[in-house]
Length: 358
Image 1 (cartoon, rainbow, N blue to C red):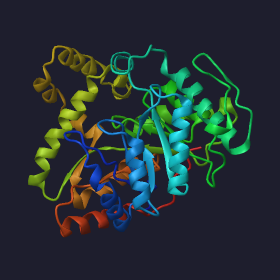
Image 2 (cartoon, helix red, strand yellow; image 1 turned 120 degrees about the horizontal axis):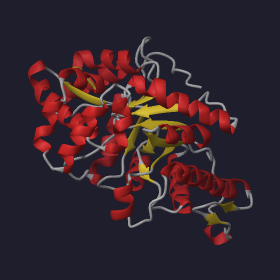
Image 3 (cartoon, rainbow, N blue to C red; image 1 turned 90 degrees about the horizontal axis):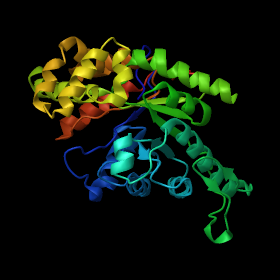
Image 4 (cartoon, rainbow, N blue to C red; image 1 turned 90 degrees about the vertical axis):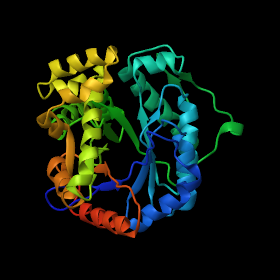
């Protein structure tokens, strides 16, 4: 999302998600056509209750300009070759509009939801991305496929399973990250970072980006076009009265994230490690209803951007302008007035040149 001079956030993506209910796949085409009309740059979808690659295929067929991407697809349950083919197909179908966003998932999900053996995610992801790129290079340039690593040995590609070159072979890869090691991996092998929503602008600027730059230095790469894409924690509504339940919801979300050990670095950065550990204890005891009261207004405003429709664009500018190139933002659309409001917000968020994060 681009905003005016003070906050050059570059792209506006709605990040269509359905945490409480299944996304209506029958409406994907019409919804994405509406996004093009409203001036959005792209649409991203995460892997929760639907396959993000199927969603992107539906969106690609219905649109001509809208960028498409996974935000994120879970990497490790899929072979690198399988992921490479899904991305290759979508890039061809969309005419070069696809971004492959990948995430590692935490240990419990890898072992108990996907049935895989756990391994440290940073080294695994580095090898994974390199394997995906090797497969693409094989298809596009006929390069001999020869991947050898701790997790993957991939060296077979026969004509029957080789889709061949495409017009737009340079598919961006973004990596979900919180901790420094994965940020460094992104700097080494990827085209962008997707900070978790709990990552503040300060944490991105002082912890994540320096780690990504260190990774680029190790790999002897430049990050001139490197992107940082985030779906910020936002509470917004038309009026102050309508805003109050949104604030309650986002306060509970901050409490939940703070209780998750994988995200503790983002809280320790702001001196809130003890709070995070206390909330983790409440979470283990399943005392969910008690947790939001531990999030003071000061903590809430550290992690969430809160304001009415008239205020939210400027507040997002002020918060993320120096460190974010792509942001996901939307409001529920009930009528034509809401559509006009959202279109105006999108126009407001397209303003200044993107920050150079290299």
